[in-house]
Amino acid sequence: MFVQAVLVFLIAMLGYGTYALGSSLIHRPIVMCALMGVVLGDPVAGIQLGAALELIWLGSMAVGASNPPDMVAGSIFGSAYVIQAGGDAGAAVALAIPIAIFVQMLWNTIMAVIVPLVAARADVYAEECNDRGIEAMHWAGTFIPFVILSALDTFGFVVGVGAVQGIMDAVPAFVIDGLNIAMGIIPAIGFALVARMIVSKKTICFLFLGFLLVAAGGMNLVSVTVAALILAAILGLNIQTTAVATEAVDDDNEF
Amino acid sequence: MTTSSNDMPKATETDTEMGAETAMTETKKITDKELRQMFWRSCMLDSSWNFERQQNLCYSYAMVPVVRKLHEQGSEKMKRAYARGLDFMAITPQLSTLLMGINAAMEEENANNEDFDDTSIAAVKTSLMGPLAGIGDSLIAGTLRVIATGIAIGFSQQGSFLGPLLLLLVFNIPAFAIRWFGLKWGYKQGSSFVPTAAESGIMEKVTYLASVVGLMAIGGMVASYVALDLSGVMIGSGDFATPLSEYFDMIMPCLPQLFAFGLMYWAIGKKMKSTTLLMLTIVVCIAICGLAALL
Image (cartoon, rainbow over all chains, first blue to last red; front, side):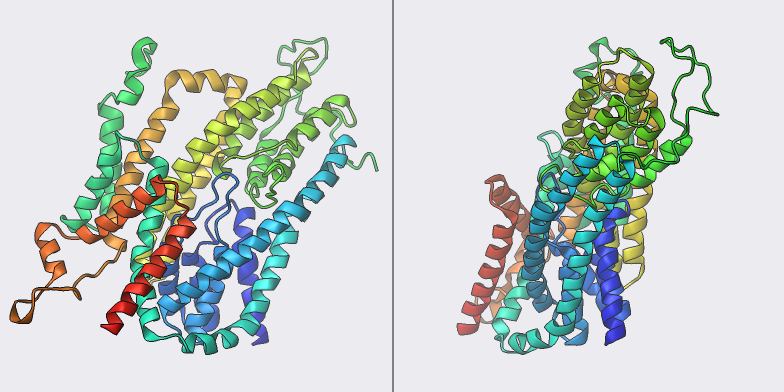
């Protein structure tokens, strides 16, 4: 148990560390749950739960000043519940969602109160031309939240799962059924959010094309992506797109 | 503790005469070493994020090698350069290096030209930050991430290690390439980047083509990963009872999924928050199952 707790702490550090490692998506449930699966002895269950949680949080991403739910905490608790307590994926999702929101609130508090104090210190060092000081403040701003949150996740992992199990056992069957159905529909929220981000009147037709290729054409997503890349190449290399055409009047380096 | 920089090279070796416009004897220039340092340091951009000035701590951290190399220790220019680094910053991490490169090129001009108006650096930073964040969010978080996720989830659902592996590879290989070449490009173009990019319309074109790929992937994912099984709902009674899903399949497969997506798309357009929508979906599903259990 102690070794497991240490490993969970390291996974959490790695998860939060994604922001120090090129924002490289290590914190996403697909990766976090797989690592938790390895540590808890059931990689396959971990990876599969990762897919389920990823679909739930597909629309969750840091855009501007809005921070998504803390997927690291959600993934750790979800995996522990499924693998250690033999829980159901639907229930794990229902557990992971509020936990991720709660931990994010704490994280937001740290980023709103503690890190700005660190930044104010960096201002003083800038005034003194103290480059080492500025660098040290950046490292402090990095490690303070990561260590606090990782410790919290580990603590929750050690005491939490057993306590939650009793409550979850008492939940009636229809609630679990409802959660499982909801789990199938919730990804649509994420897709809608992402589509809203990149869509325009001119481009919405491509969404339906992608849908049709899978729904009626039976293609898998790798093929759809390749088809989309080819289509983009056709549009980009052979057809003067209207977006560019409007500005191309005084532009002679286009072709 | 006013000075702690002990490895400040006192304008030595690498300086080459490059037609200095000032009376100074040598031109101050940053080298590949500083560019590499900026690249690695930029990887931490979101790590010291705060609500007050967002990514300012890491942005200044990434600019430290450049400022240290270009400005005289303790000079007014250095002070102002460090303070500038700590200004508000909000940009997509993978595109941040483009701005850092431009900033570095302008900082170089600033160091070599006595009359350089350094407020133009802050002006360029502020004016580019917004558009770059907009493009970056839709290009990186909205498109590249979604495509990588779409490919990975299929493998993960089957419990294969290829899931996590492909997610990281498909996302990070282009993401790090953008990060590195963005830095090189930004540094090369310097402050002339702004008019050039606007004239050629290349940003619009890239955004448009990326959105084509992203939207097709999203469309495919709606059909693949949204699940709404209506085979339990019977239409008619007795021997003539047919699952509702069969009627839908006759029209087109995956129609309920598309309907669910359309509903969410519409709700988000009505400014409904995604968390509210999520909770609402859970409550409605549980309520329906509760009613079905009662009947």
